Structures are given as C-alpha cells and as structure tokens.
Amino acid sequence: MSPAMQVTIVGQHVPHVPLLQRLLGDAFRVNGIAAVPEAGPIATDVLVTTRLNAQQAARLQCRLLQAPGAGMDAIALPAVPPDCRVCNVFEHEIPIAEFVCHAVLDYVIFRDAAPVPLDAAHWPRAYLERPFHDEAYGRRAAIVGFGAIGRATAARLRALGLHVTAVTRRAEPVDGTDAVHPVADLAALLPDIDVLVLCCPLNEQTRGMIGAHELAAMKRTALLVNVGRAHLVQEQPLFDALREERIGRAVLDVWYHYPVAGQAELAPSALPFHALPNARCTPHISGWTHGLLARRYAFMARNIERLRNGQALQNVVQ
Image (cartoon, rainbow, N blue to C red; front, side):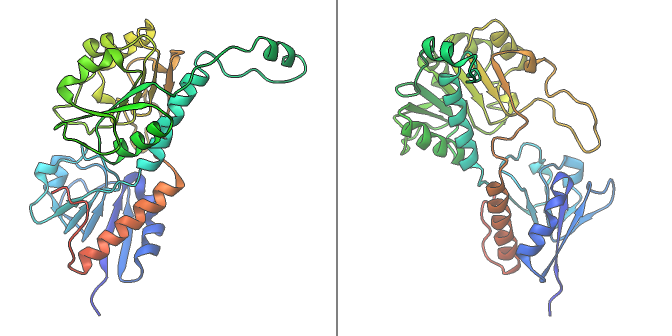
C-alpha cells in the first residue's frame, strides 16, 4: 500500500480540514496549520493557501500549491519552484453574480430610503404618498473583466433587461453581451453607463484603473459595484466622489486592508467609507455561501486526486 499523500491547509482555511479529509478519504492525510513555518523547507505533497510571500514560496517542497480561491495576487508566483504546479479554483461566480444583481435592484428600487414599517400609524400615509421608484430594465451596464464572474453576471443582468457591455483586454467577440470594448475605451464609455461592475484580476495593468478621471466621467446617478479587488479603484478619489455625490452609489465588497489571525482592530480603509450614506460596505461576502464552499472543496479534492493518479490538473496557473 502506498503511503498517504500529505495535504496541508494554512490559516483561515484550517476549519475546512474535516471537509477536505472526508472528500479525499483514507488515501490522504489532511492537516491544518495556523501559518507556514518561519524557516526551513515547507514540505508536503499539497499546500492549500491563499497567501505566500516570495521568501515562503522559495522554500516550498511540494508537488501542488492549490489556492482555495481564484485570486492569485497574494501569492508570489515567480518565486514558486518550477517543479511545483500552481492551481486555483473558481465556483464563486454564481453567488457573486447574484450579489451584483441585488446591488442593482436595491439601488433602483430603494435608492433613497428603505420602506417604512406598515403598521396602523404609517400605512395610510405610506400608501397615499408612495413615491415612484426606478427600474433596472433598459439601463446600461459595463462589466470590466469577463471571466467566470463577468459571464455569470452578464447573463443575470441581461435577464433583467439591462444592456451589457463587456470590457476586456483583447475585446474579442464573446457570447452573452450586447457589446465588447477594450479597456482603453472604458473612459469614453463611462458617460453612458448606469452600472459599472469591476470583477477583473488585480495586476500592474489594472491597479488604480478607476481614478479621479474615470469617476469624473461617470453619471451622477451611476452605480459602481466592486467585487474584484479594492485597489482596482483609487481610494481617495472614490471617497471624494461619493462624499461629494458625484456618483450615485458604490457597493464595496473588497477592501484596502485585511486583518490577519489575532488582529483585534483594523479599518478596511484609511478613509471612513462606512460613514457615507451612498456607500454600501460589506465584508467580502459576495461569494461566501454554503454552496460555494461545497463546490470549491469538491473541485480541489478532484484536483488532488488527479495529482495522485498522474492525471492532468485543472485550473493550472503555472
């Protein structure tokens, strides 16, 4: 009998050790550690983590570095040894697309205020003076980044009757959109856009891509939804645009600072977005569902089994 393959889960993902062990079975040993060792080799068959700096990556002695998410910006890929494969996992496009739809519908239906309680004291006036609200139908949305999240979001927004433009690096024709434009056209598109959705990866080309110039080009009624990475948008210009009501609303699910284990206090931004009435601030929950967890770990288990069986891995990053 061949020895059990060693799988090590790091950090915030440690609570999911029993789930992965159950999916993999007795041919694998799944362990959890709070953090990678500060020195010496990081020896295991498979390492599951979302964060690895260059010094840590250089000490890897494993066959597979499996990220339990899609984003790779916190992993020092150039420092990973060439004999270690790197894979990621998606499966978050369903809940994130639903989150974006909720952001759009909440904005057009309840832009000014939530409904009043319909008790005996409020009902007569609430009915007789009920205001008109807007519709999502017919609005124009631009989705920056057209991977799994962008495609799922486009399908749902188009089902609501929105005109959807995909903004991509290559601007090649893609199904499920009304138009496709390169990123270079974004500033020119913004004056006509009602909903701007950011779901592209963070890299040197996209970092800070939405700044003062782009925000100034947007409609005063425009909705910005960021489910990609906070640093896609320049922090101070975004705060200023919201505070001065130069855009209608921002729904922010990704942040400029993230806590580590044991850190009691940390603001998600250097600026008080939470105090702005036209900012909806959520703690990176757009994709965080029970369904996501089940799908991701099922995918990772299959990928680890493929590694053991000598089969081609899926979602290979490098």
